[in-house]
Image (tube, rainbow, N blue to C red; front, side, top):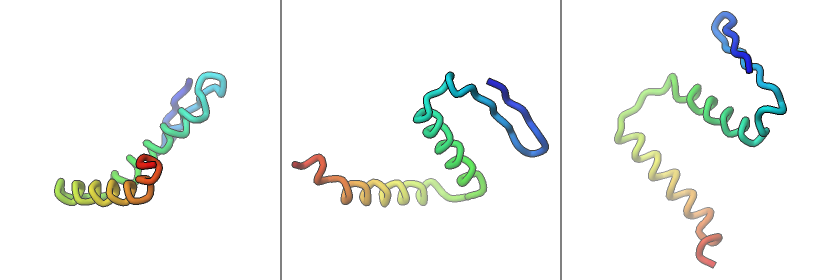
Length: 68
């Protein structure tokens, strides 16, 4: 693995044989999330409300899978 810094970016080189594509996809999603959140500001209360909304929406869409 090689990590380079070029101007204001990181360049990461990972041999294909070293990392499963699914693991890499999960890692990249986490990095994208961090990037999106980096410029956002909010209170703990707003974060809690958002988490509640997301959880409620998820349950509405998926409850049939668990209640059958």
